[in-house]
Image 1 (cartoon, rainbow, N blue to C red):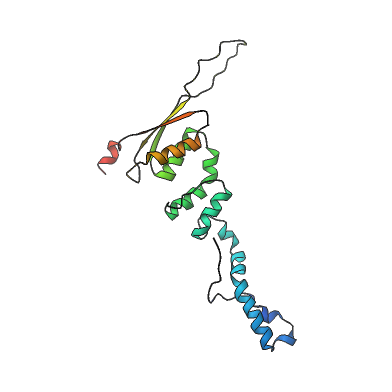
Image 2: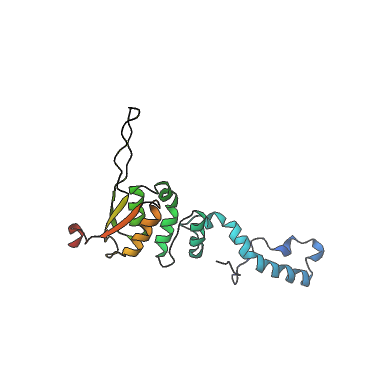
Length: 187
């Protein structure tokens, strides 16, 4: 990720015109400052456009991965450009829902294009009576059933990677790949 010199990019604020009048006709001073203008033009252009560099929808493609590191989300270099941008745009929403069924389903749909159903054995209970019996131990396994979505295929290993990253470490995760739903088969 570098911003290199752009041939022909003119500086919006040429330094030669800012020099004292004594140097206005000095050829060496004007050529020297023109050289500095060439070097600094990309820097000034970047600073002038900084808000666009920080917006994942507008930033140059090579900055999307860098922005994803700022919001703590992984984007795969092999993903299509628009998908990488969408994941970074929705990063806060995905973080807010992390660890929930809805969050996992949305992350799988967004990142892999699959339709998912999450079956979770966990839960919580309470009692108004002090010293009451503890609840039965919940099944500590998350089962994720996925069907092909926009891609038409399911990469079970990638699904499992996302599921494991989204579930607590002490919970077992299992992925079941189901055939495409009948509603989509005729499309």
